[in-house]
Length: 229
Image (cartoon, rainbow, N blue to C red; front, side, top):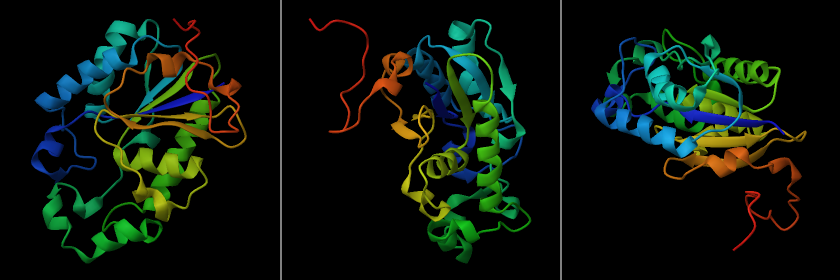
């Protein structure tokens, strides 16, 4: 069984001001984000990790710092440049309410596969590098979950591709700050176990054996290994 745990960074100072920060440095967690990171540590709890990889931007590393300190043990956070935020080019640093008036905005929402940001990156290129990061992580030796810490568009693109969906459908997903989504790569077709969870305690989900589930009828729930009372 290989679980892929996708974590979006917690609420940032740019989120608080409605700015599309992109790859700008110095964008740290907001006060809310620091609380979310602390809460995320409790929600994840201790679970086996074979590789923990992150975008190089500060807000991603800050999100995982409390978990690493409490539960990480010998787990090292590895920086993967392919998990970095989308290069929004000339859009970076601008208010979202202003960008929503740009003619390109509609195409971002409906045909992202055809979008190239001015002086920036194409969304198709972004998805390709994000999947490269995922595949490299899956090849890591050892047992445990693959944990990727990144940004909303990056994670939505990974989920869409893993589920066999066209990039133009990726805006159907919502990935909130400090949310966790989980994919099971035990089969030739990955399964979506969890999507955009920002509230639940997830230790049982991350330690149960999803590969044994028979999905005729939909599945039987998380097997915690505990006998019913």
